[in-house]
Length: 150
Image 1 (tube, rainbow, N blue to C red):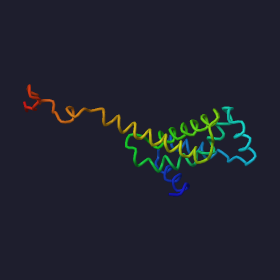
Image 2: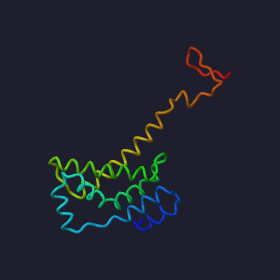
Image 3: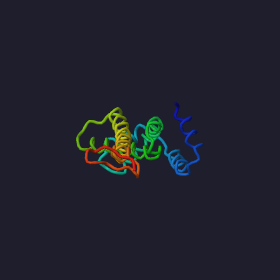
Image 4: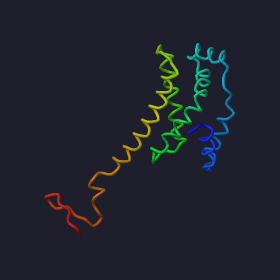
């Protein structure tokens, strides 16, 4: 799905938080090549890393929207937040001497979003033991662990 269609669909969702985020995202202006090169050369400075991460906001929105159907318990804004944290992680690792490529940042964003979805879905599955799912309130268990109806 194209980015403009995604933005339009998200705006039509009616969620005030999503609309407010999208208004802020639309205000972000793309950097020039000269500006980007300067930020990349000085990516140990937090304010410049923030500008670099802002460049990836459209991509983060696209990925979060794409994976949004897989996340039953997370909203698109939750996934966007995870994507932003993934971008910060990628720039943080590169500032410590790691290699930085656009692909590496994109992979870090996707991995962080996928990890968040998997973590939440697994936690929800672990919330109930099998016994809690199978038993009714009136059921009893005998010494052989057989369920006896009350």
